[in-house]
Image 1 (tube, one colour):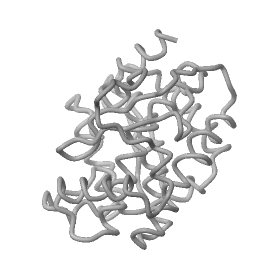
Image 2 (spheres, rainbow, N blue to C red):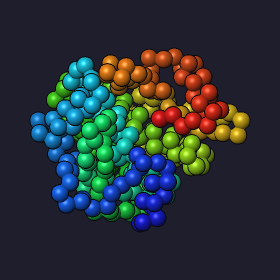
Image 3 (cartoon, one colour):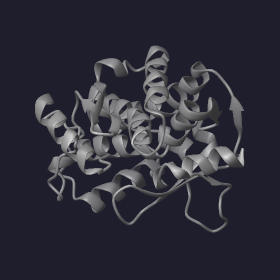
Image 4 (cartoon, rainbow, N blue to C red):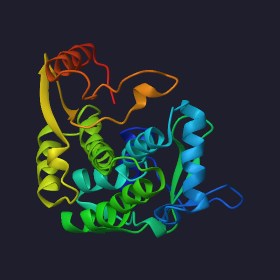
Length: 251
């Protein structure tokens, strides 16, 4: 089990999971976020709106959904992709700590339960019991588009495969794992974006093309994601090829 967590951390900070909750820290239990009117969900949305300077509640929700799926549960997706193991990321077993900046400062498991399991269990624990109910809760609270919220879920899950493919993970293995994940996934992620494979010189990796927008360009930072659907597919691919050639690892 320790080896699984250590390998996840080798792919970057976003895949780091704390085992156990540090007493005295201000943790938010993720199962509370599934209640659309909970104080905890309000805290998460308010923190992101302050940090990013978003213009509206629904834009804030879309930004939070993309960040959440790409950090909080991404480690479980990657653990399955590279090790064939499923981490218990059901919301009652997960807690987050807010950052004073954009995103989350830490993700923790109450019990670091890991088991060999098929993709269907990953989908059940990460999508059916966690990310999709969270998207629906934010839809109720902020009236953000459910399709766009699901787009954030699809983007966040795909990010685990794409980022790992450019940080030492086997591109073939991760591409095949993503296809297997798509075949079992709920929430219709196949219609919300596409993973492509690019090669420049001796560098190769997977990249994501979104079909929905997280509206982060409406924040105070006024920047678009590298996968933003507001840019043409040709422009996004050209940009991805440039950064791949330069050895940069875009999110």
